[in-house]
Amino acid sequence: MSDLLDLFRKTGALLEGHFLLRSGLHSRQFFQCALLLQHTEVAAQVCAQLATKARETGAARVISPALGGLIVGHEVARNLGLPHIFAEKEENKLVLRRGFEIRPGDKFLIVEDVVTRGGRVLETLEIVRSRGGVPVGVAAIVDRSGGNLPDFGCPFISLVQLDVETFEPGNLPPDLAGTQATKPGSK
Image (cartoon, rainbow, N blue to C red; front, side):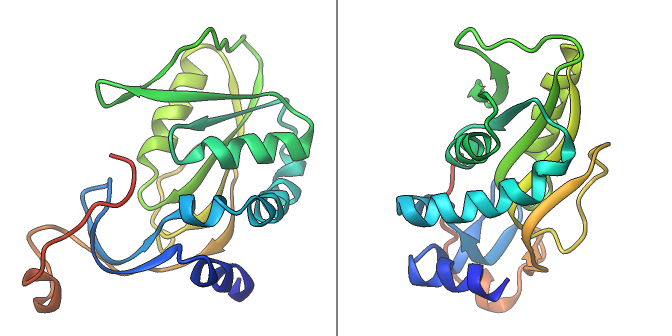
């Protein structure tokens, strides 16, 4: 775990400040995986570790929510020798496009970069299930939920689990209440 956090720090991907997360929560830390994954050797190394942990799920295909999960999903799928598809935003809702198909009975591994509340994972799971696919696992580089993720109905795997302090918008500590929040991730 400390090696991965060191990689985040070394690549400038662990940001400190006042951030508004996609979940609507505020935080002092932000994991900007894009800054980590821009280094192809680092991306290959981190995603290979995640693929190794996810190998036992029995997945036949990989799906990830865009934009954050694209590189991670692709690299994990490549390491597992599996096809990779992705769901993308349309009117702020994830949809399957580009001719991607999910056949009944297809066993899917859902791959994301960072999870806080699991919202995009839940949307992706719904896409898979609504087409008769079978989610056999969810994998993420960073679980920043502090153990507060919903039940995905399949095993959850991550490389690092953290209890990163988050705050509801109406309950900010004084040091954050006096500063403007930034939103560096995907909207």
